[in-house]
Image (tube, rainbow, N blue to C red; front, top):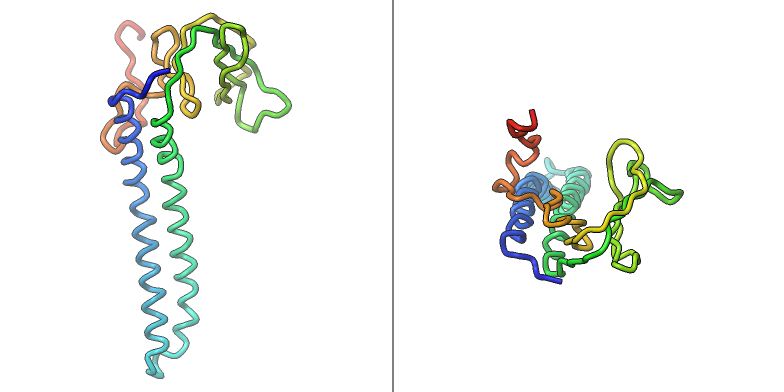
Length: 185
C-alpha cells in the first residue's frame, strides 16, 4: 500500500472545484427561491389586503428551492466521495488483471468487468466497465496499482487514465478528446 501523492490528490481536488463551479448555479437558484418563499409569506401576513393570497404562491417557490438545493448536493456527491477516498490507500499488487464479459447480474449499460487478482488468483477488487462490445475473458500477469473507488491506476507502471496526468483548473477544457501524436496518425 501507499498513500496518495499530493499531485494525485490535487487532480481530484481540481475535479471537485470544477463540479462546485457547476453546482453554484442551482445553489444560487435555491437561495433565490428560498428568498422568494420567505418574502411572499411575509407579504401575505403583513396585514395589507392587497397581499392577500400570496401565501398560496409561497409553496411553489419553496418546492423549487428544495429541488435546486437537492440538485446542487447531488452534483457534489461523487466528487466529495472521490476526495474522501484519497484518504484511503492505493494498493500495489503483483498479481493478475482479469477481464470478463457481462453476467446475469450486470447492470444495463455495462459491457463486462475488470478485476485485480492476487498472486493466488483471489479477487482483490472488481469494477464494471462501460464500452461497446463484450469484453473477452483474459488474465494477464501484471504489477497493478489500484484504489477501491477509483479503479486500476497503473498496469506495469503504465497509467490507465483513471487518474489523468493533469486536470485543468475547475475542469474547463477537460473533456476534449486526447491529442494524437504524429507517430499515431
